[in-house]
Image (cartoon, rainbow, N blue to C red):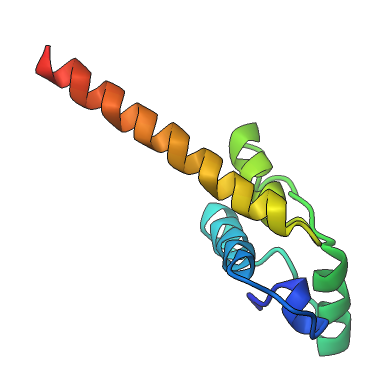
Length: 107
């Protein structure tokens, strides 16, 4: 289930819900299973609406704290600004790294 809490609560939402979905996808890519799971759909929705997830061992033992922090930021409930701000920060850091890399190669 990739739906953000805002969607499940029938609240107005914007593109930041896509960042939530990216958080779910990233979580799955890093450990192989979703951050939210329950056989009962209503219980699953409750977990999502509350943002209740963890990083269980041994699956997350070798995952960096930076990756865990990114997932946590992306899966923050009621945090449109956090999710969008995170995206902008990542863009700036990535573009800086790309510029440094290109500059290093030209030397």
